[in-house]
Image 1 (cartoon, rainbow over the protein chains, first blue to last red):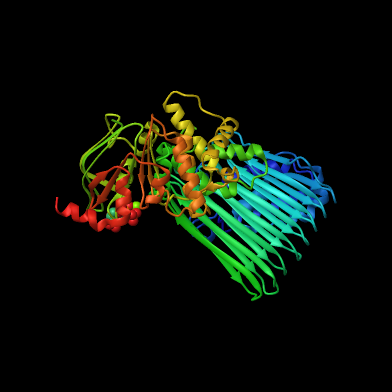
Image 2 (image 1 turned 90 degrees about the vertical axis):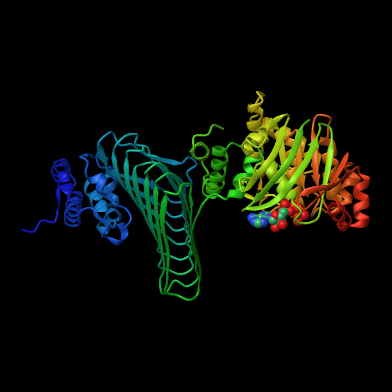
Length: 381
Length: 252
Ligand SMILES: Nc1ncnc2c1ncn2[C@@H]1O[C@H](COP(=O)(O)OP(=O)(O)OP(=O)(O)O)[C@@H](O)[C@H]1O
Ligand SMILES: [Mg+2]
């Protein structure tokens, strides 16, 4: 027998066996087993894997995690096909997520508009690993806002997945705010599929964690869809964040916009990899992508790679990436009006990030973020 | 004495631009500084404001009797030195009102006065905006971003009105203003003029000095003040051109 698993993976084997004992749903048990087998085979990604080239997850694997999983959401039964559609073979993390999945279903009925946002908050205890897996099904013509937040204070490992199915003419606004503590590890995957003439507007804020990784995989499955996949990562100390996103125009006449901004201080490190595919028959596609980075220190670093792969001529596409520093003349201007250096830098940083912050429609999140940016260098305002 | 510049030599990138400049400004006075392009007027303004790229080689600058040159630009501002930029800088993503409130509160805090919350400040700002007849539509917009040349200059004077400096150095605030805007800005400056503050007007045009009557006119050429006089000097300059004073400098 050839074993490809290493010590790092085996810590989950025993815990997985225990979990299976309490799994009463046969379909789910088989799916979990299949996912765990995939995990055992793949192991965790290493920097030799092109998609993980800049993100070394070794520190996360050198710790011992106690895996926690809740009871299955009864509604999963009816949504089993959608759960099965989750691409758990993407990598070791997605496979492990499905194996241990703490399942929850959010169903937004046809033609209903929810006034209040749906709040999904995930908090892992010290030294535990959590595996939230949420299925969001927005039926045709529905409208809702989802607030997905990660708030683990201590050393913990969050490995999450969310599948969002946006029905025909449905309109989903999705905020994902990751503000785990500075010793936390956070790996998450967002899968989105958009139906006919639907709209999906997401804002992904990454502030916390020692090491975080977010994969976004969005597909248009019918014509007329529009998606915004925007984000901000703001890193201090030796924080590391990696966003990998795929926006797949498989069908004609869809529009996607992506604005990602990064603010990197100290010795932090950011990675942005954004692929936009425009498939052969996807005429009338409009795809805009940009990633802008502000380095506040000489020792911070970012690796950015926006990629457009276009297989159709009748499209409107633009993409670009920049890495820059604060403008000296702007800084001097603010100083001459009496703002101390740290406040002046914070204000310019705020100006840089403003485009993403200001699209946040929930005042509590927006003001928290305003304060986080304006106070980040320790200046009182 | 509010400002005293003694034998100032300063430059940039190893090039000496100010070559022994002297200037004395008392509270309540308005000084005009005129002079040909490249003579060092903006250099003087930036040295007084504390621009980090400029290097003071020798000489002294005293503000209310204290060494101004050892203060950081933001400290100078809080002490009451203000420079209106010849080319105001755009600050994307930062709203005018947010910026002005932060600036106002920093100064208030420094002088032990009450800071204003956004609502209180908004009322204060509306009052100040009347000085330059600026519509409140400009408060929400990013600082100078997309402003026309004239709007930027007006915004500089709005900042001056909000910060109430003891010494305001206005570097060619009149350039790029249309006739009406020039009158409005000039009237604004006159409103802000008091026995407690002083203004240095850097300008190329006698026109501005018809509106804002200076107490003294200085001609800067080759990094030095080469001629000084009252407001009639500006009229004479307009007629005779700078060759006349440059000649005078040469014969000195
Ligand atoms: N980085 C630099 N290196 C060398 N020379 C410089 C530099 N910056 C400015 N100068 C020179 O310094 C001189 C003085 O410039 P300054 O801007 O002070 O002139 P000014 O009197 O304000 O002119 P204007 O009336 O055109 O505004 C000019 O000759 C300019 O070219
Ligand atoms: Mg000049």
